[in-house]
Length: 574
Image 1 (cartoon, rainbow, N blue to C red):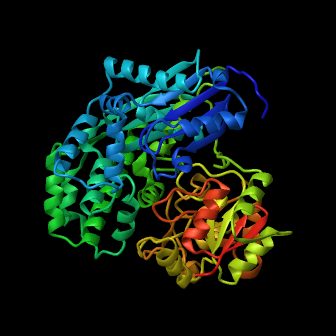
Image 2: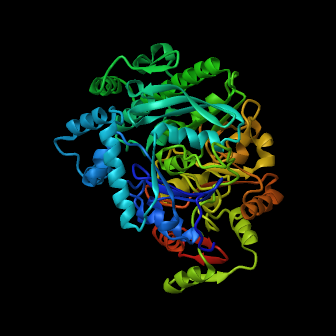
Image 3: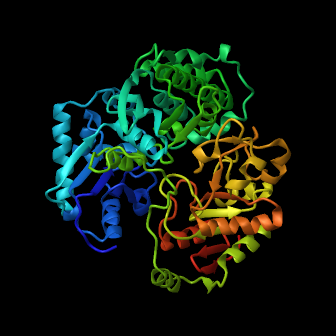
């Protein structure tokens, strides 16, 4: 794109957990990416310098062209980590188990949760504004207007405006942000109105963080493992589930009878009495049941039967499935980058610029990251001691390898935004072979054995393979909700189905013609267009962004085949 100055440019930034940046022009999301993809530190926290520079480079504009910058969250805890970034780095290393906990771990946890309960005030707002403007000035920004967006408004704007709904109920739920754990809003005639703010005392997000930590996993990262492990437990009836008594729903309120450290200590006592998988099951039931009850009450209160959701709690695909199947909900949409990593987009969408205030921006696709030129790719290949050759028909080659039982790395076009691989930075294989799944999980991806993989399938094949009676694939196309597999189709999907008969699918329509072509080639042989699709990374690392990352992953993992744009790259097989 050529260089130009426009009052329509809006840059959204987020400098906390899973930092990133997004660039909007008018009513269009041009570019969005998270800092981890450039720093190569998963869920990077800190000022997103690389992401901001990538946004500017994509648009071909200097920093001075940006007249509006939006950033989320100005509570005292977040402001403190902005002023003293060493605190943020220390917590990042501790959370990711990159440093020893030390004797003050208990105090640090108490202080963190106590501090995050505090809501923004005039001082924290002024200090945040001073700090962010100083960081922007170092990058060459000048004469811009800095907008500070409420944390949950950022989540809500992304959900409401990208849902495609003309009017809807908007729910946000996460751990904590700006002293709150969630919000209930309405979106009617382009206006987003607050109905209820949810105080942090009953945070389902913090509750699930505690579960993850007690199970010796990484909070804010391994909650999906807890959800997966829950399916391997002997069920515990809700009436005798002791965790159910720790969170209550009072109309539109989430309430916990215990405060601060007492909740964690009580959960620790309960964990002592149960096997890990049963504890995970009981916790998952709390999240599903309590969140569903809150959503039900909000639907009844507002009369709105279409629901848009965002916030980290909605990364729980079983919760999303339960909500979507509710009899009092017609449509249920989850913003695909539902966690804090999506706040750069949400903050930018919160800025009211005429003539586009609050208008809808349906997400046709999530290919909003960088792409790389053929020249760049050739240079990368020439530097490596790997066998490679150009392909006349890369889709045919990929389909043949997959059908032969091979696992391939697939790197094409612009990188996806968000935590899911959607056919441009993917690892692909047959969906009907459990042995491939196990090999991929243990030997190559290096994940725990009980974590399932996901299918990508042609949108028109969804009804034949999945139970779609009570939930619409069109509402959640990007692996944001679980679906039940039809019993008679389980053998076709045994490599991507969970033990409970569910999967987390991507529904491919016309947004990615190349990937769709590949699925159609698979369909000619197998009868259905479906593949196993997992993210292009080794577990614990960010998804590959650049060709260099792709080649590094090929060498580190021992995978044999990489289709890098128009080249087939071969590694020595493991």
